[in-house]
Amino acid sequence: MKSFPLNATSRRLPAAFSLTEVVIAMGVAAVAFTSIIALFPLGLSMSKESYEETQAALLAQSILSDLRDKVSGKNSEFRLIQIGPDNSPTNGIAKKNYIDVDTSQTYLAPITCYVAYNQETRTDTLYGDVELRPFEGSLSKPPWWDTGNPKATTLAMITISATFRLGSTMSSNPQRVDVYIESPGNLPAASRKQFLFAGAVEP
Image (tube, rainbow, N blue to C red; front, side, top):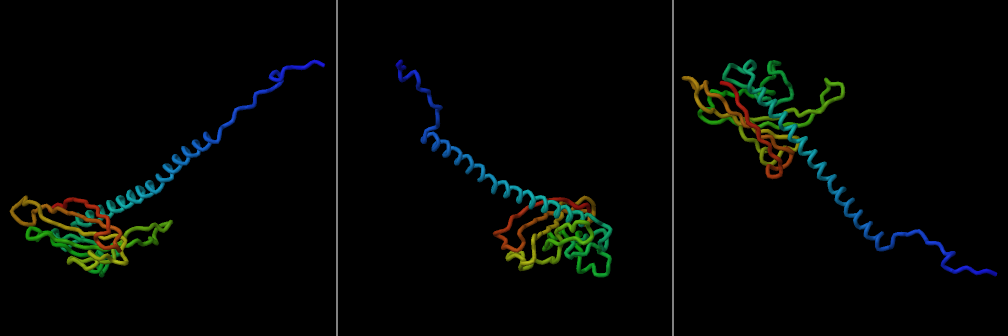
């Protein structure tokens, strides 16, 4: 009987990962997944901040548009600031929806108006869009500006001040408008985010 050497019939087994290599690979994967998961809250936070900034900019633009409107006020020196949900200043209850601001007197002292906004669903749109609508306002500082209004989503402070005289009358002063948008409106002032926008109103 012919015999063969033992090493001639043995076959090499396929290579495999050792336990140490598996543990190291799992550790690296765990660190990578943890870093990726940590980015999700950051992304959500940035998305929320971007949304708030966009809403604040649109609200400030709307306020400045109302102030630039010379047609709806009592005369050319009066501007309107909306404090109620109805858009029409000539529907018989305009005093409940708008405040007349006499910009000819801003050379004496700046005029400041405070407005509270909440989110309302529009019934005149196909998908029921939600938008910020004013529901309360005052030319004097209300208590809720410091403490927060439980009904408010956003608060606005509008300051109108004269800059320099162009003509011979005080009403020739261009008006500087500073709009402070703060949210959430139901929190105290120290806990709200503030966005500042500046613009101008022609004399």
